[in-house]
Length: 296
Image (cartoon, rainbow, N blue to C red):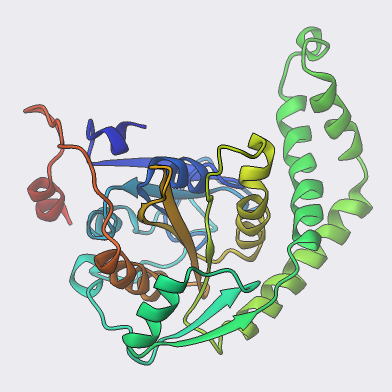
C-alpha cells in the first residue's frame, strides 16, 4: 500500500464492506469511512452502500484531507449538507467524560487501562452482526443485477456463475423491499443506541500466522458490514505491532454524522500507541501537508 510505504501522504478509496478497513488494518495505517453522504460522490450510489473515505499515516493527516473533501455537491442527492467543520483544528481533544462501548467484550488490557486513566467511561456491550450480514448480502444482489444488466448480451455468458446467480436472485422485488425495511429499522435502532455512547470500539484484524487466512478477517468483516448498513462513521486506528511484528489495529464507530467526535477519540488513542512508519518519499510534484492546509 502506497501510504504505508511512504510513497504518498494520503489516498482516497470507496468502502462497500471493508475496502478501506481491511488494507488499513493489514498495513498499519489510519483508514476512515465517514458517515454515509459526508463525502459526495458521482455517479450516485442509490442504495447508499458505498462510502468515499480516506487513508493516511495519522489521524491529523486524515483531519486535514477531510477539510477539503467533506463538502457538498449538488450532483449527489444523498450528500449531507456541508458542516463547515475544520477537522484539523478540532481533532485534539481530551477523553475525559467520553462514553466508550467495547463491542462483544474484546479489548486489550493496555487500551482499557489507558481509557480509564484518561477519564473515559468504558462499558461492555453485545451486538448481533449476523442479521446485518444477510441484509447487506441481499441488497448487494440488487447492485450486482444493475451492473450485470449493463453488460452486452453476448458477453453475459462470460461472467462467473456466482455473478449470474446473484443477479437472478435479485429479480425478486419483495425481497429487496423487505431487506430495505430491515435496514432502516437497524439504522433507527443504532441512532437511538448511540445516544448513550460517543463511540463503539472493537479490535480490527489481529494477525495470527498459525491460523488459516479465512479466520483472520471474520470478526472485522461482520463488524464492517454492520457499520456499512447503519451509515455510521468508522476509523481504523493502528496501535503498534504485535509480538510477531505485524500491525495491530482497533476500529472505532461513531454516531451517524458525528465524524469529528469519532476522530477525536481515535486521535487520543493514537497519541498513546504510536505506529512506527518508514520515511516519506515525496517527489517535488507530490502533495504535501502545507498544500493541503492552504487548500483547506
